Every structure is written in C-alpha cells, then in structure tokens.
Image (cartoon, rainbow, N blue to C red; front, top):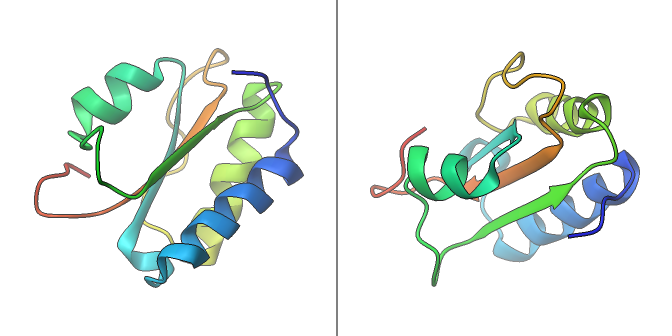
Length: 100
C-alpha cells in the first residue's frame, strides 16, 4: 500500500463513511503500525462484508492528524495510541462482533 498525505487520507475516509451513512459516533478510528493485527485481531473486524477502511500515511504525525480530525468529527476512539511507527490510519463501523 502506497503512503498518502493526511488530507488525501481524510478525504478518502470521509467519503467512505458518508457512503455507508451512519453518524460518526458509530465509527471507531485509530492508528497502528500493524494493521492486520490491530484491525482484524484486536478489534475483531470481519474481513468480509463489513464497513472498514485503512490507509497508510507518510509519517506517524500524518496518521495522528487524520485520527484527530475524525475524533473531532465525532468518531469513537482515543488519541495517543501507537508510536513513531504507527503510520496506518483505520476506521470501522462498530458492531456487536467488533471490539472497541
């Protein structure tokens, strides 16, 4: 996955969320360095037939900027996670099978 700048990621994620139609509070957003483990392991997000999106940012600061924008928008999640290698930003629609 090619890295993208914060504004491009924000736009792509926002478009995806709007397409689904739920309010921001129904979405969880976060950052990580290991997208497979975090999204599909820790959060138990289904790999098929579930609304989710992830993008790779150029830097962890870019990833944090995107995360903050969505937390300010009203998405669930918590700032301050990850480390300097956390360049993936992800969001998923919360459901009974997912773990926040």
